[in-house]
Amino acid sequence: MQRATSEFIRLAKAKAEDEKLSFSEALLAVARENPQLASDSRAEVIKPSTEYLIPTPERQGPQGPATAEFLRRVKAKTQEDGVTFSEALRSVARDRPILASDYRKEVTNSKF
Image (cartoon, rainbow, N blue to C red; front, side, top):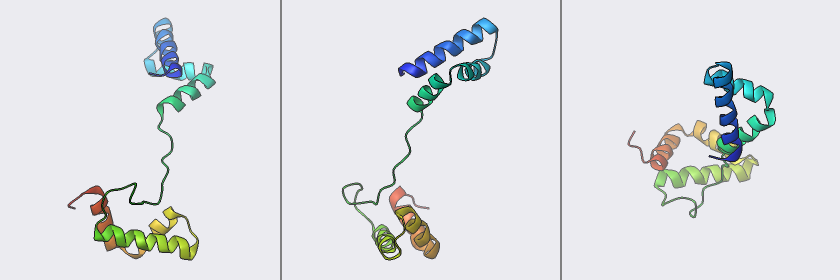
């Protein structure tokens, strides 16, 4: 466990014991009293935002036919319409729901 989180939990345990509070009440009290420590602990525990990147062969395994076609359409939409990858992804999925479903099945190795 990292430093801020360890300290935050230590303070919460001590407060819970000293003031006869539940652990969750003690966590809230410590967070109010030490907002920077709470923020630092949160930063240690919470995963950073996921960065969505245009898939490339280096970032993924072999592509099935639905994946290749779906991503070709998404890439074309980003270039033609000047939209972000995520906007193009949603647009192609809306326009071609069966292709989107097949793409999802391929990338998740799902049968359904």
